[in-house]
Structures are given as structure tokens and as C-alpha cells.
Image (cartoon, rainbow, N blue to C red; front, side, top):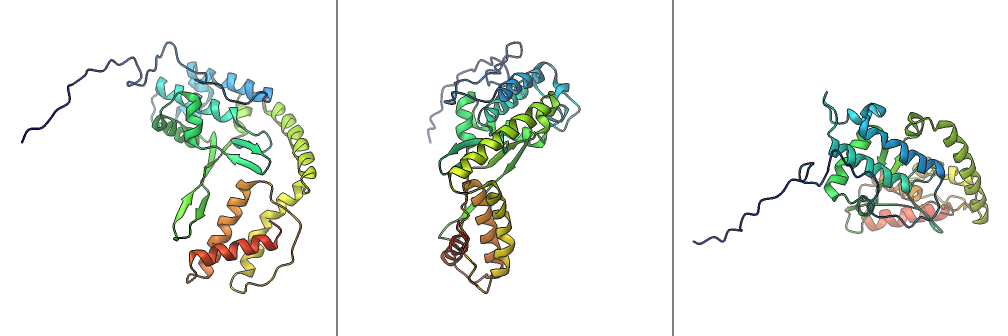
Length: 270
């Protein structure tokens, strides 16, 4: 049997394991600008400050040790981590330190695929960089899920949040506290305009404990006027409520679980 073989074409390694990295001229700025016109100056300052890590890995010891080796983190990996962290800071909300975009309906987390388009990194290289940042405790990542009608779970965009100690590592702690206070005041003003309050958001955290007591009895809960402004928080609450209902009622179908979850949320005015 005749097998067609592709003609071998030798690759030219321009540096960094064929990823185009040049140790003497690293690419530490985003490949294309974001659509954000104005951003807090503290985030711009932090983006500039973290670039010191490329030449001096001792500035972020936890990231330098993310490879679980006594050896220094490779230069192409440092480049990727800095690009990933830069684009995350580009979309960081100062109030919650989460990566995403505020909209009229709430806060929307951004996918790694979308963030990678601004860095010029391939998806796999971006994912490895994010994993290093998480291992270095510079990021916290939570993966919300949604139960489908067929009983399977669908993953939503991971919630990524910057560790506030990253600001402290570069002497920006006091500035961060000042900016977060200002951001909270702006958020409270918007919440008031939307007919809710910051304390109303906090009350939603108590929903799960109340819902667990109602599991199995389907008791009627008094309606409230509190509305959830943040869809990411709602996704977490809904997932927890689904899991509680599923544990207490293993014989229910996915449709029944979703219906009861939506009913409980509606009873709380969410």
C-alpha cells in the first residue's frame, strides 16, 4: 500500500521553543489594544510595575517557584505570565478585583479564549500562564456550572480575581484601599439607581441556608424586593441551590430541579 508522506519542512527556531520569544527583546505589552477608553491609574501603574519581574524574578517569588523547581522560571514562561496578567488587569474591576466587564444587567466574566486574543499568545500557552498565576496565588479562579435539561453540566466563564497582595508587593496597598473605597461609593450609587443596595447583594449570600431548610418541603417563602444585579453571584447561588436540591431529592429530573430552583429564586425576588 502506497502512503503519501508530507515533505519535511525544517522550522527555524526564533527562540523560546518555536513560540517566537526573544530573551533579549521580550514582548511585554498587549498585541492589540482593548476597547476600554479610561481605566484607573492604579491598574496602569501595576501593569508597568509587574514587568520588573521579567528582569528580576525575585520580585514575585511565588511565580518564580510555580514550576516546582529550584531553577529560575524560563524567560518565555515569564513573558507569557506577564502578558496574561497584564490583560487580566486590563479588565479588572477595582471593587471586587474580578476580571470582567460591567454591563447594565450585571458583571460578565471573560473567557480565557477572549483574553488571549489581546496578548498574541496561543491558547495553550495562555492556559499554562494562567495555571502558573493561579499556582503562584496571584489569581483565584472559580468555575461556575449550569445544569442542562439532559442532566449534564455546562461550564460557564471562569471567575478570575486578582489577589490584592499583588498590589502590596509593588507598594500600592494604600492606593488600592483608597481606589476601592471610591469604587464602592460609585457602585453604591449605581445600585441605588437600580432600586437595590449593596446590603441587598450581601443578603443573597444567606439565600442558600434558607433554601436548604426549604428543601423537601417546598414551603412558601415570603417574597422580597431584593434583586441580584451581579449575574456571576447569581450563577454561584443557583449552582449551590441546585446541588442542595439534587442531594435532598435524588429522584428528581433535571427539569424538576431547574423548575424548583427558579421558583425559590423568584420567591426571593431574584
